[in-house]
Length: 134
Image (cartoon, rainbow, N blue to C red):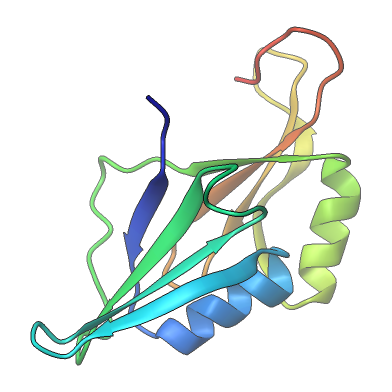
């Protein structure tokens, strides 16, 4: 078994695709429209779906916003240099909601980014060795 994708409902598909490709550096892998049920799917990732988990953006036609609720936390993304990644995201127009630095009570370097719909992305500094990120 393996994780295939995480699905997020978005209010503006083009704006979200722009954010995930131009700000977060993902590739748009494929899209599909379902006219019968009035929605569009876009799959994005850092690698092909056969090699890694990807992000599925679902746009329900005519729905421009959602309540995020309080159960969802964040999507974690490993980066080689969390400080450089934040600089690049800011330069591309992204919003850093928590500047890079050590996690509270730990040593792992993290930062948080908000996507156009308000979803949180946690950037985690890549570690060398067998340790797992928090």
